[in-house]
Each structure stands twice: as C-alpha cells, then as structure tokens.
Length: 73
Image 1 (cartoon, helix red, strand yellow):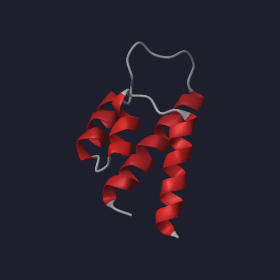
Image 2 (cartoon, rainbow, N blue to C red; image 1 turned 135 degrees about the vertical axis):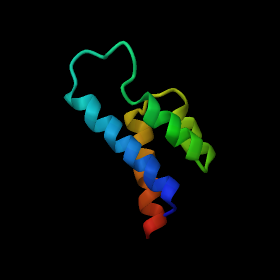
Image 3 (cartoon, rainbow, N blue to C red; image 1 turned 90 degrees about the vertical axis):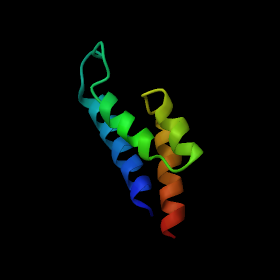
C-alpha cells in the first residue's frame, strides 16, 4: 500500500479512537490540521470524499479497512 493510503488509515484510526474517548464535542475539530494534511496527500477520490467534511463515519472507516485488506491480499 502506498504511503498515502497508510496515512489515511492512520487519520481514520486516530479520529475514531479519539471520538470514543472524548466528552462533548469541542467547538472546533481538534484534528482539523490532520484532515487538511491528509486531504493534501490524498491520492484517490475515495480518500478525498472521506476527508472532505472533517468527519469519518463508521461506514467510511469500515470501507477504508476493506479496501486496505483487499490491497494486502
């Protein structure tokens, strides 16, 4: 897998893990800079679409993991 794909998975994992440990949502996204950088290095329409709104849904995360596994097999 390319570096950019691994970077997307890292951002996805960090965002999901952080969301589960936090209290009420802050007024600003603490991962905004991470999302900005990930969008800058995105290499596919899927990556850009996932990162566009600054949020990663469970469905987006699961699809990213399925794509990663498919590339590894």
